[in-house]
Length: 158
Image 1 (spheres, rainbow, N blue to C red):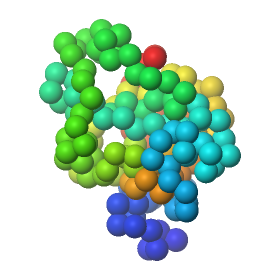
Image 2: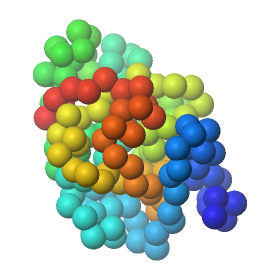
Image 3: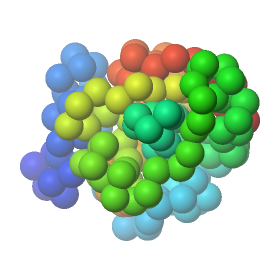
Image 4: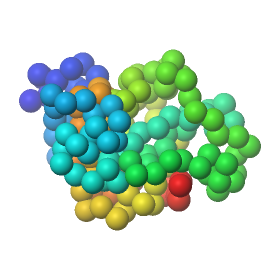
């Protein structure tokens, strides 16, 4: 039940509900702060974890939804996106952009829409898991759901 979820996860559930699709945020007893933690808690491959990583692209927030099995190549991604520089956001910048903490950043439910890139490698998994606003909350979705929910641009990020 969304009403029993932590406040940040309730906001994500509300945003998911507003999408018109049915998604259920789940709270886990185990941490999902890292992709490896989430995969262990969910019993899935680490690559099926849709990591929400916040960067600054020429100073503007950029959400990169990447496979838990990948590291983002910021130089190559900057070239693909046509921006000068991509750098990792600080915890404070992440919270300002998303309203959520590192380790729990959801693909949606932010104070304002974020420019989003979706890792094409996530297409390889029939079911993905994404954080839902806290390091203990997640929800399942498909690659196509992720692209539609975020309005993201599909790119190779690794």
